[in-house]
Image (cartoon, rainbow, N blue to C red; front, side):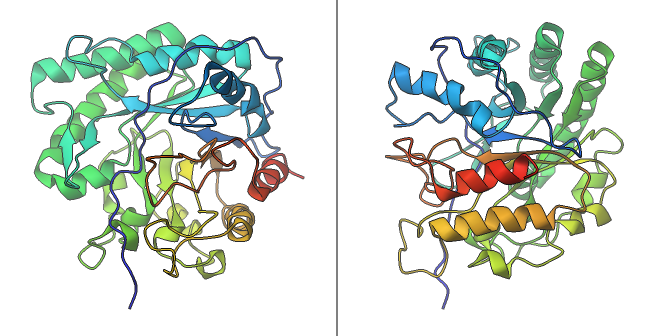
Length: 348
């Protein structure tokens, strides 16, 4: 009998601080096919208790994984500042030129609650709050003209939790998309989907017996998805990289013709903490092998960007299903997977 681990949200809502000295311009160029690579999440070494030197190290080492940094946060820091640029976005852009990286911003609109439920951080049917959400997005594009802007992370999770409210999100997305494009036409605007759940799977997320494929959600956005963006953690369903089917990522192209983006990718380098004897989990060898398999299985896709989760392991208090998926240990020591990621993302 398989042991199930019920896990909550994958999208990390994190804040950071601007610190550190200048670094040389070292960010990697896109791969020969135009794909850009990087890491997701503002996770310095020794997280969640990093020093100022640890924050500096985070930004100085970003070029080792690519030119992109996934910056995922709530659309609003507080009710008092709703409509303004979130602090984590301002901090990231304040450091982007100095450390030569490109933020990939995704604004979340719901939170994971302790009981496993989801709670919207905006009244999606309220005209005033909808306007504030749009003002936030517009403030970002007017100030930074970003190449990428996500308006919702893992949105199919919210559809599963609150299907009656999802239409309100869809209309808000459409209105905000149009407003952003009128100011910054070159910004690629998108929503992020959780791929394993979209496939009707996600065993370790729970409820997989009742879950049906959700591919139809893509078409509900009409022509307002500039990228088909996903988080992907195949270890939620498969016990080894070899078990991941050959068409696992190719299937995406059967449902959308948009360029594909992976805003979070992960495979653990250790057994899952709560269930060390479970067949689910991983090892350092498995993690490195999954990276090789990921590049092989996505070779036929029009891949715009791919971000690994995370720069460092989460450490004390981290999520039990994701506390070893990173390319470096919590203390900053690299894992074998880091070299594999570097070689393949640079086309070696």
